[in-house]
Length: 148
Ligand code: THU
Image 1 (cartoon, helix red, strand yellow):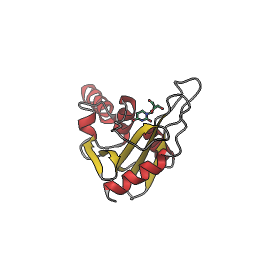
Image 2 (cartoon, helix red, strand yellow):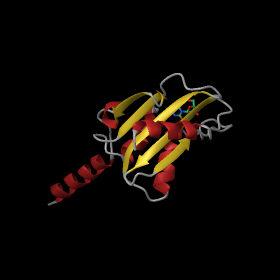
Image 3 (cartoon, protein in one colour):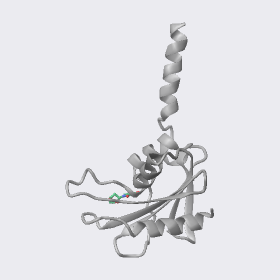
Image 4 (spheres, helix red, strand yellow):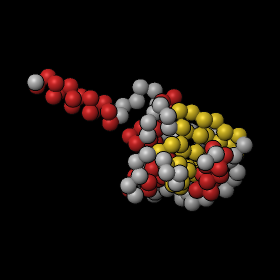
C-alpha cells in the first residue's frame, strides 16, 4: 500500500475522534504485515488521564485481535472540525508502545499534512536507544549464562 493511501485512511480514522476537552482530533492508520489497515482515533475522558491517543487505539485494536507484525503507521491531527494544517507526531508513550511490537529499524512512521505532503521516519529515529522486549530477554539470557 502506498503511503499516501495510508494517510487517507488516517484522515478517515480521525473522524471518529472523541475530543470534548482538547478539541484536537487525531487519526492513525496502522498497516500490518498482511496488508490490513487498523484505524485509530483519540478518545478523551472527563477524568483526563484515561484518555487514549489515536496511535495506541490502532495498535491495541490490532494486538487484541492477535496481530503482531507491523509495517507502518500514518498519523494526522489538528484542531477539531478543521482540515489538517500541521504535523502531528506521536507522543512519547505511543512511541514506546509501538516499540513493543514493531521493529525500530524498519517500522515507518508517516506524518502528513495531506496525502501529498508527507514526512517519513523510522521508529528508531523517533525513539533513539529505545528499551524493548529484547532488552529484558537479553538480561534473562545473561542471568542463565552466569548460573552455569
Ligand atoms: N494525541 C494523539 O492522539 N496522538 C498524538 O500523536 C498526539 C496527541 C491526542 C491526545 C489528546 O487527546 C489530544 O491529542 C491532545 O493532546
